[in-house]
Image 1 (cartoon, rainbow, N blue to C red):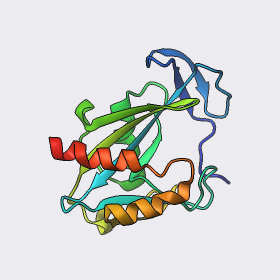
Image 2: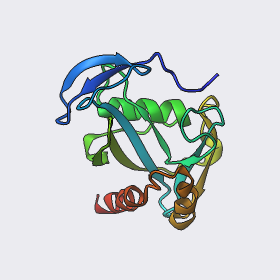
Image 3: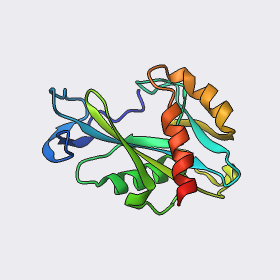
Image 4: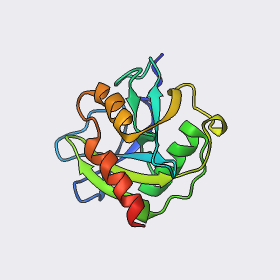
Length: 171
């Protein structure tokens, strides 16, 4: 069985991030309708970045390395609460999430992705991976992380990774 929860409920947004409806994940979105996705890069203060490897039964990009954490915002959540939930679910992290941690919004064909940047001293062995979605997690130098992220194909997150590090260093 796929790890993806096709019955979860999403708020549906227009391009201006106004809620215009509700759907289950398995339902088709029409042109001009978007769901929200949150993604983050989490860095160690030494500059290493945490990546997660998706499980083999994910519908999209199975077994590929991915950003530190990410997923869909479910109905009723804000971008910040969705980010906090995803971090806690996938990695067992309880980092505070503020609007100022969001450094980029990107619009795609049927989703709007909110990118966040965080820093942690949490060691890998203190993470609690959501085994239904995450095979493993590891810290990498940005150059090695970029090579791993090329597997995904449609977007190697080059801009997002660079901007995340810049965002943290501007705080």
